[in-house]
Image (cartoon, rainbow over all chains, first blue to last red; front, side, top):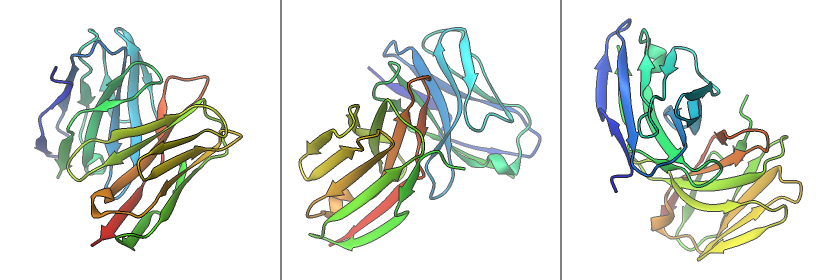
Length: 111
Length: 111
């Protein structure tokens, strides 16, 4: 099992550009989520999904879109990147309420 | 406003000392998890507590869930340099699938 995979590992964007962060899991988990982590801080929930076709907003959803067309994949789209979105992004999956398995993270810089 | 507040934010101690990290909220959680995160990696689950008053031990780490299920603590006995990392608590409410993370406690154990 690969667990949770994220691509890319590093990305630099200019203000206003758009991009998609990819996340995939091979554990057949129903629940998937995206977090951002700013320097020296905990994780803030961006969006989450409890199954294919079902998504909902977390604590900081503005500027981000998600979709869940399959159980395995949960991409995060930045619509128009802003410097305030510079962060490390983590994707996680789990059975609802159980241990979350995290990917290795994507370090994003917006200039 | 952070739903889960952790204290202290940063702790630097000598090898062999004991320490306690606190995770507090005004909200009630159906379960609470503790994770540890090392630099450049995603968080990894240490323990899940689900019953008010529950105490769980993991070698030198003792976790306690408050009677009212609003707070938790992590106590480390005789800290080792290998305990260095970011400790995160995360709570799940009865009414939601979401897992909300605390602000984190960064621990440095000096040899």
